[in-house]
Length: 293
Length: 288
Image (cartoon, rainbow over all chains, first blue to last red):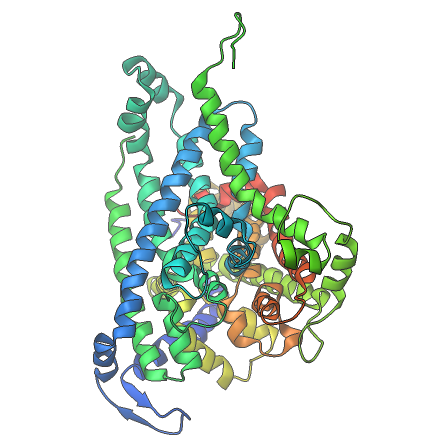
C-alpha cells in the first residue's frame, strides 16, 4: 500500500466487489464443491450420494489405469519441459548473437506462441497422417512404421513433438529477453577473461540466466500438465481408449464422459495439491532468488 | 565454399544463421503446408497430402470455410465461429483488465482494514488453474443456468488474479509523489484514477490486452464443456468437430478444414506479430 493512500471507506470496497464476487462464485465455490464431492460416491444419475471418506482416493491409488496415466504424465512433463527449454535456449543464444536479420528471426521464432494448443494438435495430425504425413514418411526412412492413435508409443511421441513445438516460442521469448538484459560490461569483461565461446556461455551467461530458467521450469511443468489438454484431445482423435493420457485429461474423461463425479473430483484434488506444492516451491525460490548480478 | 581473400567467412556466424533458419523453418513450414493444402482440391489432398504446388482453390475453400456449416443445425459457419471467438477474446481481455485494475487500485492506494484478507483471497486464485476445478465449475455454471451463454463462457475464466497481480506490481512502482501531488491539488481518488493512473498505464494495458486476448481466443477445454449449441462454438472449440469430420468420410473436406484451422490461427498471430514489442514487454515483465 502507498503511504499517501486515500482514506475513503466505501470506494475501495466498491472497487474490489466485482472481483471478489466473481472469485467467490466461480473459484471458491467450485473448489470447495470439488473438495467435498471427492469424499462422496455419486450414483451415475446424480440422485443420491454416500459418504465414503478417502474411498475415492484409495480406489485411485489401486487403479492401474490411474497409475499408468500418472506415470505417463511424469515422463511426458519431463520430456516436454527439458526439450522445449533446451531447444529454445539454443535458439535464443544464436538469435542474441546474430546481427543481420535478428528481428526477422525473432518474429519467425515467436509467433507460434499465439497458436491454440488444439490447433497445434490438428497440425500434428496432418504431419503424422497415416497415408501421407511428412513426418510419417520421414520415420519410414528409418524403418519406423508410425501409427498415430493406435500405437501407444507412437501417439505419445507425437504428443511430445507437438507440445514441444508449441512451447518453444514462449521459452525463446523469455530466454532472449533474459540474455538481452545481461549488461554489456559483463559481456565485455567475460570476453577479455575467457577466449572460448562455450566457456563463456557456461561460466557467465548460463548462471546469469538461472533466474529466468527457474521461472521457466515451473511455467513449463504447469504447461505440460494443464495447457497440453487441447493437444492431447485432438491427437487421440476423441478416442482415449488405449492411448496415453495426462492426468488432467483423465479428470475430464472420467468425470465428463464416465460420469464418475467422486473419482474425478478426487483426481482434481490431487492435482490441486500438486500445483499448490509447486507454487509454494516457486515462491520460496523467488524469495531466495538465485541472483548473481 | 571458398572464402574470398579479403573477406573471411566466420564459420560460427554461418552456423548461427543455419540453426536459426532451421528453427524458423520448423516453426513456419507446418502452417505453409496448411495453406498449400487449402489451395488444392480435396481429392488431390486426399491422395497426395501436402506437396509443393499451390492450386487455385484458395478463394473457393475460403468461401466454403466462412459460410458453410458442418454440424446438424448448420449454425456453426466460419463467420459465426469467428464472431464468437472475437467476443470471447475481447470480452475476456476487457473483463480481466477492468476488474484487475479496479481491484489493484483498491489494494494499492487505499487504507483498508481487510485489505490483507482481500489480497490473499484474490491471490490464492493464482494457485489453481481452471483445469483442476473444471467439473465442479461446470456444475455450478449449469446450476446458474449459464450454459451456452457468453456470460457462462467468459466470467468463470475471469475468476483468476493474473491481471490484478500484474497491475498491482505496476501501481506499486508508480512514484509516491504523484498521488501526493494529486491530493495537494485537490484531486479525489476517482479523478486521480481516471486522469492520472489510467493514462500512465496505457502501455501496460495494451500489453495486457494482447496477452489476454490471445489467451481467451485460444481457450479450448472450457468452451468445449460450456457450449453445446453449435451457434455458440468458437473456432478453437469447433476444431475438434472439424478433425472428426475428416475421419470416416469418403471425401473429407480437407480444404475447408485447413482453412478453418488457418482462420483460428490468424487473428491472434497477427496481433502478436504487429504489437510484438508491447507483447514481449508485457509477457516478460508480468512475472517479476
